[in-house]
Image (cartoon, rainbow over all chains, first blue to last red; front, side, top):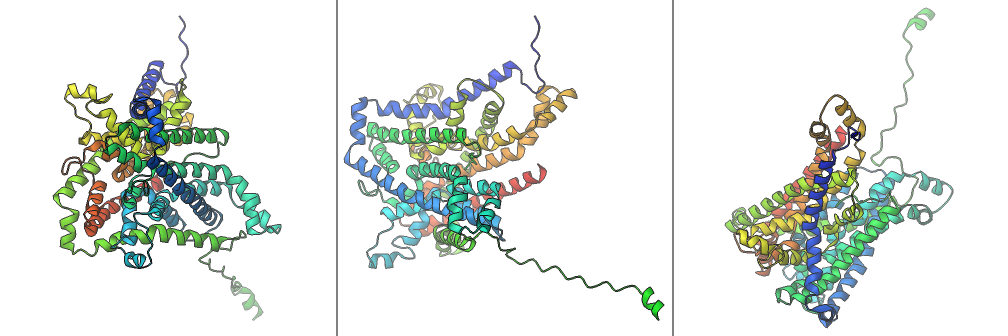
Length: 281
Length: 294
């Protein structure tokens, strides 16, 4: 029997089969089983119990707070990312690489530390603690603190997506627009924005997933007041610690659906726009 | 006289010295530099840099002696050991399986590849608390996996092993995603050359392919490690959180905060920040080194 010719850079079939099997087994164990466990636990007492847990008043309050937090922190992040990318990718200035490193800094800081710093600044004992009490402003253990902590942990998302993209695209198109008399804002809307919109969307997508799912940083500044300062992940924690497993996993399943939706949209974006690619975190 | 002037070396006209390059080079034709840089620096300072300095300032209220007493107490040392040790083991596990995953995704075709590719990013998209309760349930003594481990005498949940499991989940995408582009760009010629010179496939991979992947692998490894060191949400549910045994450093910060020990919390946070900055520096250095040799 004639042996099929194997190209020298091709692995033998047995090696391929072995590696693919090991990879699938590893990913199944680490990724798929936890995902399946969430839905199995949520539906343990039937769909009705799971839906009841999600439509509970405290759960709905948590969903609302999570949506509010994302609705403020994600546009903020997009604005910051666009400003940073415009300054960094379209202009030359000293200290640029230091600035890029500093923008990435929140990814290297533990979420718990991210929460702690706002307690130190705005908390009772903090820098502005007394002044805030005098004016009856609550930041820590209230919604503003949750939003601030979320903005901190998500800050690099859009910027690190847009900076390399806009650097690759160069400045010639913008220069042409400006030299023909377009204003800066017009240049941005008519030339830059169409070029970066998919990259922006990609960054916003990942930013939104993190903003809705952030736990550590938000946990420190939230105060865990039920129905008031609980986001969805914090609500999951409270229910779980009360041994209310069906309810905890029902809310968790909702967050899983969000994660899966994020992955589907992300994959679709990558397939449609190959220039837009994940750059890791 | 005339001859002299002719023979004398002609004085070269003094070349106009090029104007010294100004600090901010040639103003770009594109407007908005001042505004966008201003907004960027202001927001970065207000949200990240100034609040971060609060940690150092708060910790500085302690005397050096007190600082060492709280930042390096027996309990804190045990927490660092667990945090860094578990993050290291998890990053190593991801280092091994990350290479295999990236290799399979770039080089092979297999059914379900698209789904696998999308799923690799699940730890980025899934809230950490959800991962935490799911892993705790799986590895609990009566869980889907825990039930098989208990007869073997392995206690995974509520144990340091649980911390490694959670950090493996959290760090999974880093090595895969940093290796993939490098592996894709690796030209086939070097492998063909090695093969045509008589190297076996295994030797080609070990001597030609893996060294080319080393910088990206180290970057991914360091990123997974750094992420694991700071991770909180996915760990606390599965760790059991026993002081000296399965208590991670970020949790210790929260415990100090809940006892209103702000200075102690800041001291531990400062140690963690120092490690984070060191990791950031290492990652940047590795990337700069890789750029020079690519």
